[in-house]
Length: 354
Image 1 (tube, rainbow, N blue to C red):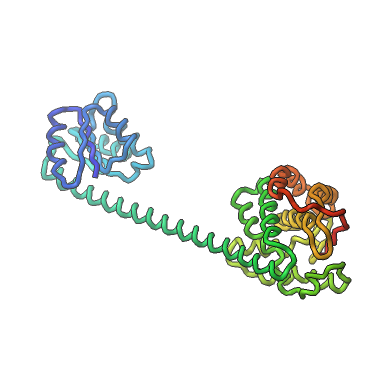
Image 2: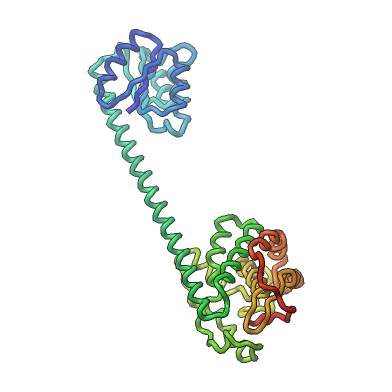
């Protein structure tokens, strides 16, 4: 425990220090100059302070008030030593933050008793502070572990989906990364953008219930097959419904709305404009762009330039113009993400229903 004594009378200071330093496990520092003492106390935290009332340049009441204004001294015991028996002096000192008083001349027995109680209180305070810090560390660690577990499960589920769909793990990660870029550019904040990044890989989770003959069909789908393919949205929404975490709830929103269109002609609900949740609008741009750039059983891969032009062309009809603008702002990052893709064949019309 660290104790400070501030007393401008050298004899009184030596007497006080001689009494106080007998407390076990205590380090005592004594100061004649209150300005030097306040500078030291503001630079380092002490566990108990004794301060004289009448001192040159800085009186005890002002000394205490300055320390109490600092967060680290809100709970530290500060004892006022005074020969002034005036009632108003004590009231003013209490208002400034004095914990206790000692009258001059100081009674050594009373001093040891009062300081002993205050030191015990301070030790208990520090014990509670340490326990609170330990608990906060444990909560933070548990939160990090939970977040890591959620992330791992998301990517493992998306990997499982790869075995049912013709898409690859790189498709899933690219869509997630581009979605995060768009979210960041829209100013949603890093936390929200990261949540979207983690939720996006499950946007097509409903495809686990779609027959292989439809998922892997090399040609265009029939009208009935398109209808069945579109059920993956409702299936995915149902799989992710009633989520207990923000991440699962975001994934549910994305799964349910990433095929809606800005002009209201999308599915399954025909939502229009800002009635479509922002997560769904963001994912729609990232998902379609990557689908255009990727080879599928029913189409060749488009070049990045062709896919970009298609996204631009559909701003205001299929896509939220703000999301397309954000996509454009991050184009250099998107090019770096995709790197060298396989040479693209001539562009073919995009089968939006897939």
